[in-house]
Image 1 (cartoon, rainbow, N blue to C red):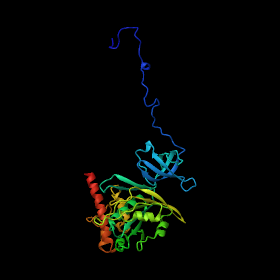
Image 2 (cartoon, rainbow, N blue to C red):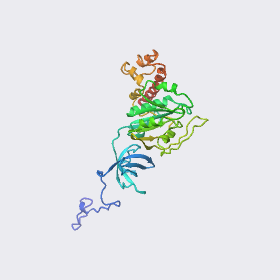
Image 3 (spheres, rainbow, N blue to C red):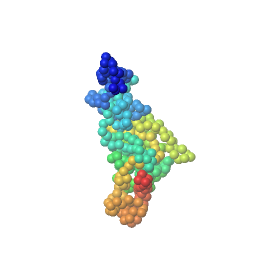
Image 4 (cartoon, helix red, strand yellow):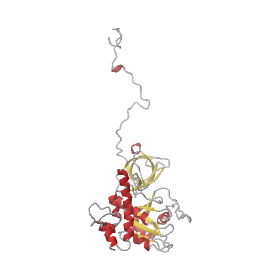
Length: 352
């Protein structure tokens, strides 16, 4: 006799149908991983991000154009939505005060500008999506220009497939000629101020038809330039500390502004000023792309050449020593080798 058999023939038999299941307190319908397709979603441009709320532009360039506020759908909680993204939105798309739409998809990006906290950190921080130009703003003085920081911007831009442009401010304080020699070997469009007046019309022409992300060291006058190009922006401006020589962070968020002239429209994407720009996420093979003059000489290097000071038969080193790359060659090579050495150290640490 089994332990559950009492021997009473009149005792009812039990089967699976006798089991009573408690109802789900959160709803009787089981959850499903099947998400709605949102075929009625409309595509919008992300203009600003603020504490989980996204300002997006719907029906861009039409009479129905309007800005709406949206939140991110739960299925996108592991995906960052950044300025410049094109997103599909559903819900209340009227744009009326107090309404909230929902972002349900991120349209595939054409470019993605990223940086890391430092060169040893491979965790990337996304800055902006879908930009096709980068305007690097540098002051001729106050604060002093940092050519290696500019090199980093150029590398990040070229790695992302973004065209870099250089803009020099505060030329009434110093002559930028020596600084610009560091980039003589690059195919780089350069704008410089004259008596502290920027060529705004020429810069605007270069921005029309493009999504241009503005980057620069704190205190170089980036926000001042944005306000001059787009008066409605009203970005906060600051000054440089006379003791430390450092600029104060005045722009705390990344915001897009429309720029217009008789030839059309474009978008200016202003980012907060930074004092460092980590390249921990960059493929070292892409570093040389930022040094066009050195890259041409590197074509003669032996396979697997590191281009570091101890690299045997390095064609770049030989070209610099022979004077083939001109007066700026040694400085350009030094900048390249510093970056490559950083990546070499990172790789050795990772493999240890």
